[in-house]
Length: 266
Image (cartoon, rainbow, N blue to C red; front, side, top):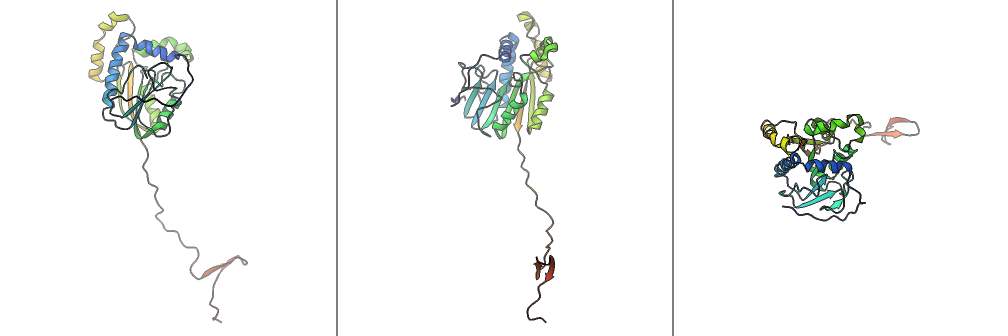
């Protein structure tokens, strides 16, 4: 069930970022379309048992692909990058227009790939999620046919419009923020270069990768859950020793402790 709600938030308009345009061009290929269908099926399965009130889609595919069409969460929002698209608001994943601990689920498609601040994106997701909330990250896999295509930027990596990070690296970032990684899936094993003929001759790679759960697919999907510590502070096990005993008073003028004697004692 999808219940899109508009947000009362405004952001400056801007052109389509180069990284976003590059990702969308890749998904427009035949291999990209097949991979997108596999991503949709995987996200639908991962979110089948996720319940709550509010869910957010952000990143490159927000407004282009509805990953939460079958989600059981009541209200869905989408945060796009350009005005005119079918989104609830326009902004960036680095600055989510939500208050602390308000969302039950965040689906971020290539939000880490197309930003110079991937740590900030993860911090924002952690900030807006409720305790035990869920996060699904969709990103390109550097150890794949798609990752091989990035080698042409090896000598000018700062000019790369889209960066890729390994699953191991993203899992480390999530662990630092207190997330528990529940599942990691890799999909889309066919090369996007070579045109339709090469794609048709390599379709068997998808069946092989799905069967043996290979981790060399073009796209990786990471499902994580925000964990909050429930530790209770321990009280001191030893009672404090009394410094003054009953019947003892402090003589501030003399700077010493003296015993208080009854007046009738001579």
